Amino acid sequence: MSAEEIKEIIIREILEIAPEMTEGDIDPDAHIQRSLEIDSFDFLRILTALNKAIGVEVPEADYGKVDTLNHMVDYFVTHLEKR
Amino acid sequence: MSTFVMPSLGADMQSAVLMEWKVKEGDRVKKGDVIAEVETSKGVIEIEVFEEGIVEKILVTEETEAKVGTPLAIIRSVDESSAAEEEPTGFDMAAETKETEPLSIPIPPVSDEPDEPDEPVETQRVKSSPLARKKAKESGIELSTLAEGDKPIHLAQVESQKRSVTPAMSGMRQAIAKAMSRSNAEIPHYYLSTSINMTSALRWLEEQNRNRTIEDRILPAALLIRAVVRTLREVPQLNGFWMDDTLHLSEAVNPGIAIALRKEGLITPALLNAEHMDLDATMRSFSDLVTRTRSGKLRSSEITQQTITITNLGDLGVDRVYGVIYPPQVALVGFGRIMDTPWAEGDALSVRKVMQATLAGDHRATDGRTGGEFLNKLDQILQRPEELL
Picture 1 (tube, one colour):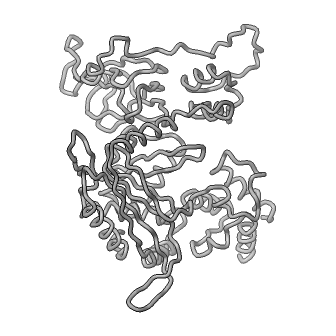
Picture 2: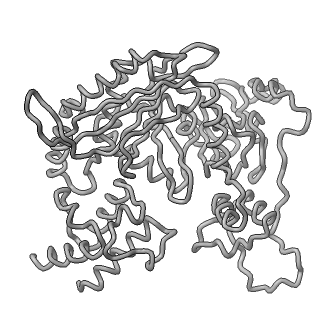
Picture 3: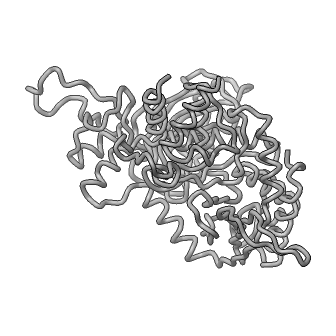
């Protein structure tokens, strides 16, 4: 899976939770939860959906590494490569 | 024999549209069964029956607006024979309102047939609720512009569209406005606050979650709900209602969980009978409740039977919540964000994860002493999270 594909999947899952947003509203370097008003419940739902789609489970201890879109893409790319 | 009437789904509700019957005449129903869906300012609500019996007769057709108290169906108890001559009972609510006008107002089917007969044939019929159609017609909104796939369009969507055109208040905004005005006018609130050291509770939760799959992970929000429910067992005076100048305690603990909607407003549906749930069950029910609230599929019991409210604004970065009690409840528990804070223990100063817990209490029902006891017990319980499993 390429970084571009992963990014697409992440954006799709974010928009699933926040349907009133568009791709253009997602600043790749902004804190996802704060900038898009996603609470901890919806954030967990996004990570659950990403685990299903990409096959990488983000442990709670790594939440700091998936705070922005760009960080999230990096995180999933790195963890897919490790396998 | 009894009459099933349009229930009141909130002090502000006057009527609702019966959207769909989930039963037909002759069906057997038992307590808690969903028998119909109605559309209100809170979205589509599944209404439940509170007795066992057989649906003898359906009195109101689908897509009909009915006032609170309007008889909707006649339910015959199982051992009763079908006796049409018997006088239906249970008209109390309807009788009380002493309405002389007809109780149900059928809404003429609008916009199914285009007004202009030469409308192009390729115009697709848009699935929508009758209230949505009515509102759209009134406000001159083209329903097809709101369609998202095949999903039927609901009132809330039309209203949010309308808001962007005119600054009119949505039904939900009005409902919140009414309830909160009543609260502030009637309830003498008192407020208490305490700092709770959440370090060990969070560490324990992290430990738990490390051994769980992502689907079974427990959020701090669920742990806090469980802790409040557990505390209410020791301080039950805050779990109930103020009615007829008396405090009525509730045996069931049905915390109303304040859930913000993405578009606008909030709903505080109840986590019913939370006193029987362990931590896992609390998380599952909480998760289910948030999902259904945000997709507009709540049950009537969930929006009418709250016994206390829990508001967690920690995700918004708020330090402390000063809540407004939802009448006729007598208390609201508020949680702010969990912050790294200097914390003194003995003579040592360290940094701990600290949260402000607040209690808004109805001073007619309880005093600060009871509220203080509640917050104190809550703190103690959160220091022993393993007992909340």
